[in-house]
Image (cartoon, rainbow, N blue to C red; front, side, top):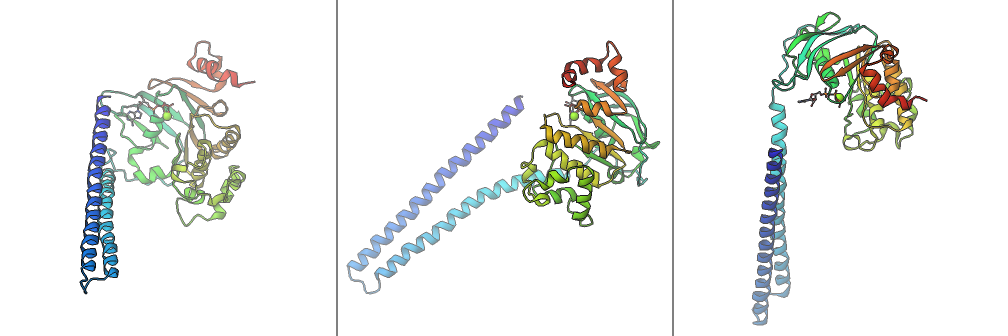
Length: 361
Ligand SMILES: Nc1ncnc2c1ncn2[C@@H]1O[C@H](COP(=O)(O)OP(=O)(O)OP(=O)(O)O)[C@@H](O)[C@H]1O
Ligand SMILES: [Mg+2]
């Protein structure tokens, strides 16, 4: 907290300084240009009145114009200097990110060309920062083609599990296997190319829907996109947007609702035909129309493919082959919906009673 306050105060001071210098520089520049103008008119006027044959009214007027041409560019340079400084700071941030080294070891040699999709977590322990374990010994098995749903309170470690499967972080101990191979043995790019993720917060580029789906890969044609969109049932929805597939979604996709952004991400994931699909369902509420489309798309996209769904919606949870219930970094229960609601004192039953029971009518 204290450091945030310090940052805010520093930013505040920097801005006040900028505004202070601006408020000194520009009036001074204005005063100088006005004084010069006055001097020219006074001097030139006197010359003309005195009948100096080398000074004419025309000359005097052109000089007053020259003054403007001299001072305006100077003001603009000062202004641009300001912008340049801001640009340099932003560039520094970008370079910092480009220069930062990944913590993840890069020495796997096997190429993952296709997975059947058996996933196994063996006593996986992990913390983002030292001495703060987020996952406290996770044992998990997903069979090829199955859909599992992970449920649990916020902060339980659900998203962390998928971060580790993609090797965004290095685990502290234990091991993760896909098709009985330790994931550390795979080349990082080839591993990640086999896993498609639809995140809680979908990021879209300020570009058309088409380009957001193909990511500017020229090998994917509009035909391909339409065929895939029809398969997962969102072609009509995209067509209903102004300009359809050429609809510009603007910065971060602000022209779409969060549910609609997820639909686009579904299509993006589906196009890459991944061996393993990961879906981190949005926590925010979604309108019923998008909800329906999402349910249908989820069904198509998870069919016959190992899928891990971090589920917040009952409809998704009930359809899963297995439900994993997480609490504070541990798996506390697992089983099908029926098995878990039949437990009298279970965590899932409590969650179901408090969150979902009202949804079922
Ligand atoms: N990048 C990070 N750096 C440090 N701590 C993190 C990071 N990401 C998550 N955490 C912490 O790890 C814990 C588990 O987070 P995680 O995102 O896995 O929760 P979650 O179960 O997905 O929650 P939600 O349902 O809200 O998405 C939380 O206590 C969180 O504060
Ligand atoms: Mg999460």
